[in-house]
Image (cartoon, rainbow, N blue to C red; front, side, top):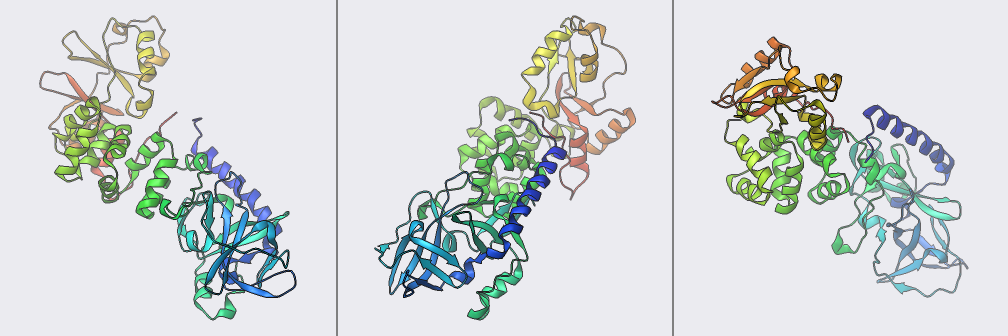
Length: 444
């Protein structure tokens, strides 16, 4: 996907919201409250009442911002009959008028690609994408747009909920005070057992949300909805969001997720963040998840999990790019291309000798400013890298990093071979509790 900066994403959302508000003003006077419409009479062309409105059915599998009405479910005695939208002349607050007096009423059967608004959306969780929040539909509004009746808004106000619970005469009085334009809403629809289709139109827009915003949504959604949301966003975006989640919520999400899917998510996370997530799982769940991971990923996680969380070994990332003094800058740059997905954990290249022992830590800025044919041996020199052992306390690591004014430190084993790296954001995560994870954004 094309990388979009946070400011550009916010501006895009603001401009989109402004355009939608203009449309909302145009149709405001023609809004029809679904809650107020339910139970109102359905009349045929001659004016005779044939039943009462039971539900409205809309098309759910289109890319249109406002789902069109496909039919009305009418309660006729003990039956629930279906009237197609082509036979509906008018939908207004006091009831539905049909286009003809001659009508063949069919028993209602849910069809693929359609959703019943009263049973499948009203009172259900939704995502307000522009507001980056989870809301619950207290009421839904339809309106005639052009020649079609369409779902145009959702009311999340407490007043609408009170109106529905009050006397019947209140329900026909729409109170659109906290209405969200439907074009900025993602609805999960009914589950598969009800035959409903899911609306995935907002896939691209969901990927413009910040990882912290997606994490908040995942924490607020129910089990089924949070997993559907994860399926809609890009894998790297999903991984970023999981790294931002509250530890308890993340533990629950991983525990309730199919083991294969959970392994795919964990494999996309940065090793140190994934290790933190696995530490919170039960021994049984952790072992099962490690067994489901590719061998390389599982080995990297085990190498971090063997250390306490508050130690340098427990806070390090194992994503390293190693080079030798005789390698050229051009060769190392090509090697870096293969590590693009781990760019947030790379701020320098570790130079090692023939025995794998640390020689120097050359920053990416130095590589960028050097000529392509320059051997790394010519770049080796002070300031020398800051190093710690795996047993070092993270607060000691923080002190060393501050004293040296470095953005990262290298973690060494007893033979001075590099095992991992600790970046500034990893130190902040470890020493500042109760705060949202501080994270450099991924670039794509």
